[in-house]
Image (cartoon, protein in one colour):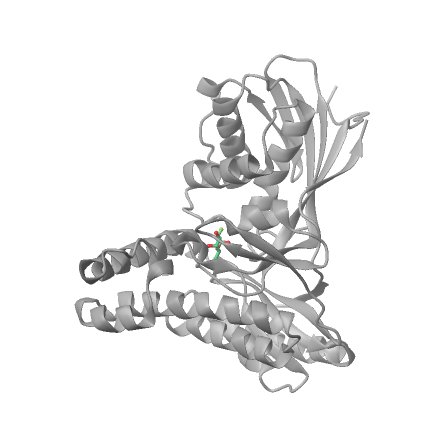
Length: 378
Ligand code: GAF
């Protein structure tokens, strides 16, 4: 009999995706980010199955089985399985309390859309197993091991933002996170009469993972050059515009551009957080546009589809700002749209995008929501 029949969960965990208002690619440069969880999420239904080390996970229409012994866990050819295996591998390195379990995973988060379905998957699994088997892990342990799972099993050398936002977010707040000290401030956010509207380009160019790792290496190269004159600089977070100008001649144009973007983007995060606190939404919107220009022209992680939507939004005085969110090369574009103009704007953007790329846009509103939580427990 399939484990799906008569499945009565002992524990249901909701693990959200995130948007990042501003501060892209700054996390692995130990800078600032301003993300929050959203209502779209991955749901995990768990139950123990009384075996010592067998687990079954059902998702995306099929069941996979794993042996929960460290020496039996290895990478899979199937990409999404590596998020699961990576987390199990990290858990097994930390505890001997894990036992057999069954789990059904359902996602309302579009994959590859820049909303971090990967962190939601990793953190939700770790959070649920921590609770189910009383593993004694802290939220910070869950964040760290989920990030490591992505490094080792998925192969993306990601920063800490997505996992942090997925676990630590609070409803109605954005998280100003310092990725060096991990100090964070929950900023209450109210952007009325505007709304946050996501337009999903529905493209996810497959350069994303390899180019992501390349950007990280390019930034490290930039740091090494700056360190020759300024040894106190440990990451681009510590570099200033003036330092960069003094070292620019030693760098290729590409490395200079990458460093220049990160230095400006860190400043923009702090300005954007202040603009939100001062309710200066016009400035906040302008910062989003500036960020997208940097993402596109200096960091070169945008794509024609995202650029099209950001440019399109500039024709509307009912839109304060727009930019591509997440790692890049497609996914969602965040738009700050006046509430009275939302329907018309979505209608016109959808038509223009279809005419240009032949793709039907997906549009939805997002609201700052709470991080990973338990919705049912017996
Ligand atoms: C991806 C990564 F997982 C994050 O760590 C972050 O670097 C982001 O891209 C870009 O800001 O989502």
